Structures are given as structure tokens and as C-alpha cells.
Image 1 (tube, rainbow, N blue to C red):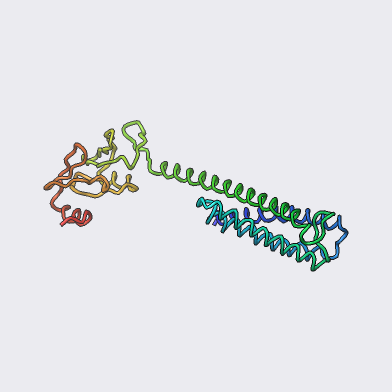
Image 2 (tube, rainbow, N blue to C red):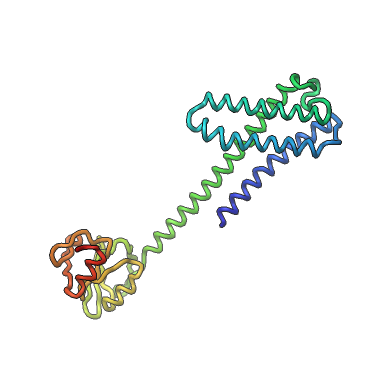
Length: 258
């Protein structure tokens, strides 16, 4: 939900900035020409045209042509879309005011075309740069969140095991098996053996986040470490762990062995 809200906020920010720049520019031109009568109508229609042009550029031209290396097609369609935009803009100005708003000296359709073409290209470049700048920032934020989540996940996969008077940080994924010895249990990892107080059942409860399976009255084995089953033994690294008769059937069902 937070990601969705953030994306909407950034899109709103993007179009707010573009709209403010556009309105300021239109206001300047209309005041220069002393044509305040149709200001709202002029801005609304031009913004609608500009939004259509920007979305066409960002969602069609760039992903389908520019990013795929079809540069010639990209340029051709970009120029064509700019020509359509400027033509519609000029025709709408003529409809509202009888001439085209643009350069002071150029007021007819064709003479005002170069000025409006260049200013439109500037708007398009500005909106594209701002959009991709915001996208890059959003992407960096998501990456940071993802990295933090991974770090948190790694911390959650580690626990402290009390052995004697010490607390030993233990990676749950490194545990291979546990051996029970009456009131004590030995937790075997890839690198060490940790003696903890408590029965085998207590050790299994303590390591609850680790998927352990009972294979013998004196042994628990990490399910993800069982690679070889030979006769009535499980081979885990250099350790041979016996399979108890009463546990064999349930174990084979878990491992899906016949």
C-alpha cells in the first residue's frame, strides 16, 4: 500500500510541476498579447494536448523504439507527434483569437510553427527528464527498502544459543542436526558443535524456525540437509545418523521415498 501511495504522490508531483511551468509560460504569452479573455480555455486544451504528447512519448515511443534500438523510427514518430501537436495548438489559437500565440512577429499558422515547435520540444525534454529522474529516485528507494528487508531477514535467521555461561550467535541455516543426551543436546552446524541445556524436544522447540525432522529417539535432522539416505542411515557431511524403526515410515513420507 505504501509503495502504491508513494508512486501516486510522485506522479502527482510530476504533473503539478509541469502544469505550473506550462501555466506560467502561457500566462506570460497571453499577457504579452493582452488576451486574458480565453485564458482558462487556452490552458486546459493545451495541457490536454501536452499530456497526450508526453504520455505517447514516455509510454509508446521510448519503450517500443528508443529502448529497442530503433532510433530512426523513434525520431520519425517523435517528429510526427510534435508536428501533430503544434498543428492542433496553432489551429486552436486561430479558433480562439484569430491568430497563433507564439513569437510576437509570427502570428499566422506557418510562420509561428518553428517557434512553437521548439518550445514544445523543450516541454517534452523537460517532462521526460523530470519523469525519469523521479523514476530513478523511486527505484533507489525500493532498492534500499529491499536491502533493509533482506538484512532484517538475515537477522531473523540467527539466534543466540546458551552454552555454559556463553551466548553463541548461531545461523539457523547452518544447523545440520541435533543429538540428544538426556538433559543436554548437541547442536551441530557446518563449523561447530554447541552444547545446550535441555532435552532433544526442548532443543527442537528452541530451533522452531529451522525445519527439523525426528529420525531417531536421539536425533533431529535438518530437512534441507538430507541429501543421502543409505540403508538405515542418513549421511550429513561426515556424520552418519541412524534412522529409528518407529520414525522410518514418517521420514520416508516426508522425503517422498518408496
